[in-house]
Amino acid sequence: MDTYDDEYPNPVTSHVVDISQYNAVESAIEAAEEVGDICAVANCAGTPEPGWIDEITPARWQRILDVNITGAYNVARATCIPMYDRGYTTFVTVSSGAGQRGSMSGGVHYSAAKAGQFGLVRGLAKQLAPHLRVNCVVPGLIETPLTMESGLWTEQEIRSFEAQLPAKRMGRANEVANAISFLLDPQSSYITGELLTVDGGAQLS
Image (cartoon, one colour):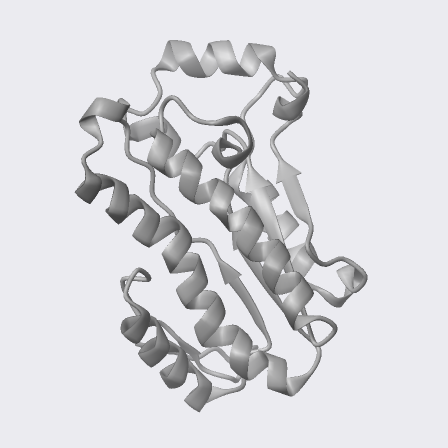
């Protein structure tokens, strides 16, 4: 679907794809490039899945890795190659504090996949410099439907976690979006290979 606005004359194109499937991602990127050159990318897709290690079958393990780390690779590969050829551009992916500290609620496969994004980001940052900056935003507990309505956290667990945070509250989605926007913007032109943590100080707790 294409959406037009008088203030922003260039069309905005939306495509729904499974980012774990490279061909689907590549097709969506090729379609977007027909509208205009991609110069900045934010990969925000991800999904957790609760379960103890004995509940996580090889198939469940693979699916979470397919979305959270292979998906990030798929988006990076499909976009960074054409962006690299254009010169100065930027790529940001969103990981999770689970990749830094581990996660009881999201599952060990989720923690492993999100930690894998750190290596992907730093490897790409070295390989694609100086033409393309690559960074990662690492949110903590953020007030979203995934947190509040998925059953991953009880109300008591959320309040207990908030009490331990220096910020004494959950983060808001716009606070993560602002961090992504900063890393996509030329004002962060001397930042690459960075893990920007947005977690209210959880890493200090």
